[in-house]
Length: 125
Image (cartoon, rainbow, N blue to C red; front, side, top):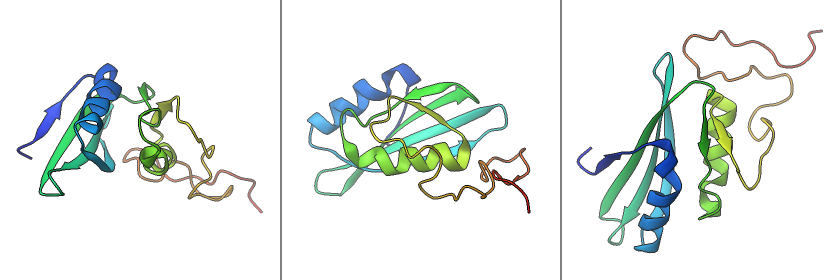
């Protein structure tokens, strides 16, 4: 992607805030399981939707990333989704569904991780 900016996780909030202040709109975020690390990319649209910019950071599995919900609540659903499906630890998320926004209590935990076999969360009958 031409407009992809690789940043340290400590710059997620400041870089996201700068894009939002410049008029960009948050679009979505994605997570890639890179075995020992997670690659997280936040996407922003600007210029009336004709330009897209991505902020990408790589963190070790189990390492926290700061939430952008202090800057825009538009990220709250995707940050919860990344927590549930990938086990990404998001620090300071404004509304945390505790792993049950999408997944039921008896659903597999972090089903999108490559190396982890999906296991039920709840009691087995």
